[in-house]
Image (tube, rainbow, N blue to C red):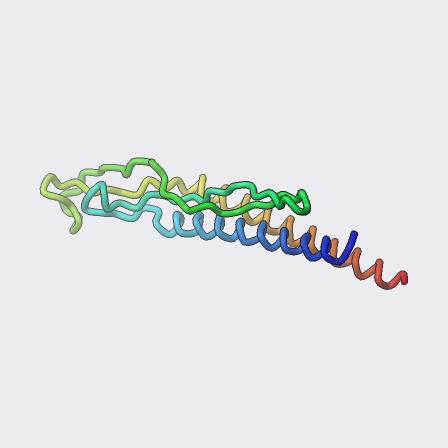
Length: 136
């Protein structure tokens, strides 16, 4: 393995970690908006998700991840009748964000694990490189 391959390995790790960070931030945003209320269906918060795609480096044949975009879910806000709420419309309805706390916690835990796995893999690679240099 040459030095350029090792650098590529760390660059790939950085991209993977960055992608998981975007994923965690999306889940955190969703959790922050659990139970948020709006005066209309169109204004209601909708959960967001990071959309990833594979990116192949033709020169090395290595595949990495890329965040294409962060997009809002198609989940419909929940209509509730609460005429005493300050944001209630003329019918006494409010719109609550359709965020599922359990789903978001699973998403955040999975992203965190993937991030940690990459940190561990890069740390191991670093240690192996250091050991190899000590052997010379």
